[in-house]
Length: 168
View 1 (cartoon, rainbow, N blue to C red):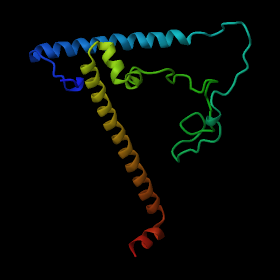
View 2: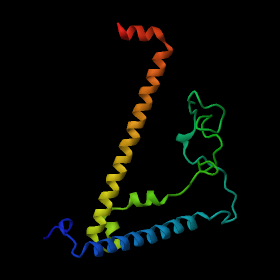
View 3: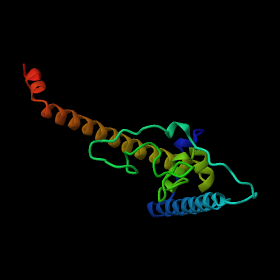
View 4: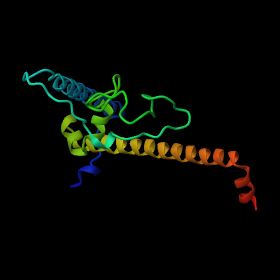
């Protein structure tokens, strides 16, 4: 047909699995190259000889980050805003740059297709990836909701008079 999304590949199951494995390896090579390029581009330290005055990368990160009750001291998740961070806004040991997963998520179906030289498979890969990331997101939202519910319940348990009011 004229619709490329409806084109069904031909071949035996083993042949199709083989091409999928091939596509996967091509994607892996692409990701490795991308990650190498990203890391190579980062090492421009001390070029130019001028002294640069440190600047805050993002003014929005300044300010107080309110601690949760179980986090004390600075530098953890809580702490005073921006504590223990470099000028670029990340902590030592924190990953900077993109992960392979982030690079994959940023690819369009067309780009997937051009990497593995198969637009139909590219679109399918992309669709699968979006479905998986959607499920992950839903799981995160559910966990966050459950956590908030638990926190509200704990708060009510600390205040017995609220409990009485709810029951009446």
